[in-house]
Image 1 (cartoon, rainbow, N blue to C red):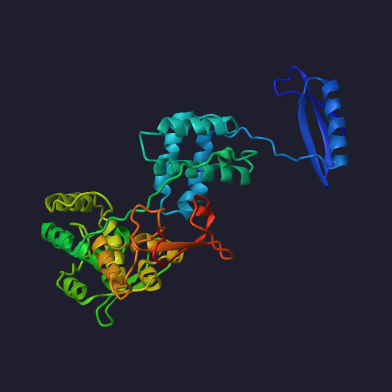
Image 2: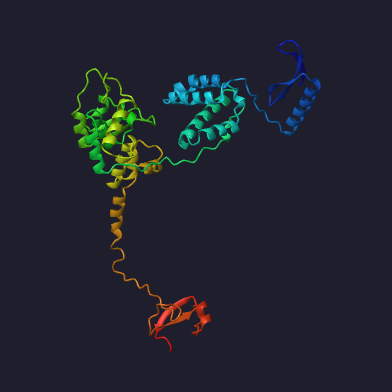
Length: 393
């Protein structure tokens, strides 16, 4: 342990370093051109180590945001995340906002300012997602030794409620199917009869369709776990009627026989169908809601519905989709119509002078459970009121 003197990189002056050990590891800190300050800091470190107060905080590197984004995408996002392109787009937005600054200059306050600037122009859920991506980048920066701490950990997310209750009634389903194009209609039918996500449907190949056992196999799911879904008879008929393109393995290929994209053709055709059917506030993903809700209204248990949907989080996520229609709830509550029909409710309470609706010829005896009280005003302390006979004149 001691003070070390070295020339700086420019070779114009001395810099002083302190050298000491902590838990068997050698640590060297650059202090600056003052030898006195270096000696003072060294004594402070010795006292902190002796008293158990020393915090071995890693120093910030000189890594810039642009370089860290490149490292994050190449070494983590691309190999690990299917949504890495979304990460790249979001992180590019942060680079445009902050500039190619050092990671240590991005503080919780600057991240809060970013949230405030985005507020109102996009949904809170969108801002939360962006901040979460930035938090993940800084988490990797800390673990890779590129930054001392993660400033985004100190930034709270907006409260949001993304649970939608929108699903189609039977009449709306018929209107949507009639308004759909010949290419879109079987895709909508598959969504309505399986609850599959758009990407899962477009990834379907003919090898995934087992007509003999009436099963669809979902190999590339959001949870990265394969699952099987039983096919209804209408869906079997729909898929059997589709022409199979010898040059394409996909059930719903694009015009060139390739896997259809999540946007573009399917988005445009679905929007036109919804508009033509005059259905308001409805997205393709709401077909998944429709599937789950109608199963629930037929009495299918949530565990089975969750298995169809591929949920791994138990009932909580399934309940988000299995909403019941108001008409179905009204019909269900009618089961209680005969619950109390044989009981006549007497709602008239006679207090003999204390009620304006007193029936003449009756009196009320007041009691606190131990003593009877007379017929004076202070008897209002009574806790039990019982009609026992005609009122006194």
